[in-house]
Length: 291
Image (cartoon, rainbow, N blue to C red; front, side, top):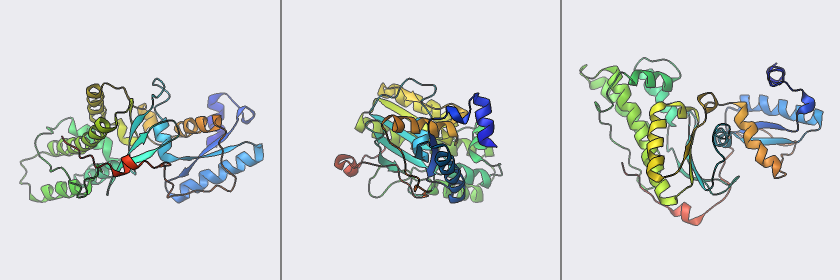
């Protein structure tokens, strides 16, 4: 039914389709298998090439619809409920993971803190809305320190700090102030690390994508950073920031143009990694973020 509705809305039929793209991973295995099995059957039945796409690469390509062409090398911050990664992209199709979260993803941290303070799910939009009524300078949260000096993210300590504050506060801090302070700490860490990596690697384009890219404070902070770096920053539209099929199709297009496709033996892979090249200088880099 979903495919039929999409074809009808687009004004095309299966005869107009040249290839099938599908999310291969990472993600929840049940959801991935539903998509992969259907896509493989459709590709086989219609005699079409199939392209398995990394979910995170899809987020990277979610910016192509409403922005100028990406100028490489690019630096991409992919931040969502399941992923918080920073990728160096020297040319189309090549990815090097330079920063990752050591524990919770940023979106996951928003969800946990939203639950702590009695907000709904998903936590990101709820906290952002409440934070508009608060003062982000009210509570000073300590920035995490990565012992090995890698430019990685960490949010579990921040969650613990919020919980501790809730248990010990005598009511002097409003829920709105706490939400604003927490959001500011998360975004400060995201932009602080991204900025310092960008100053070290000197990309020509900054990309911020994923579900958390809907956050207005993150967008404003990334725009300020991009202006400091004198490079453009690309965001997806809000309706393309969360998981969607359009970004998976967009990621498949350059692969098809390069003559790449997947075998029908391809299957779902919850551990699928995006990194596909090694660089000694990047691997040894120990950029520390400074705010």
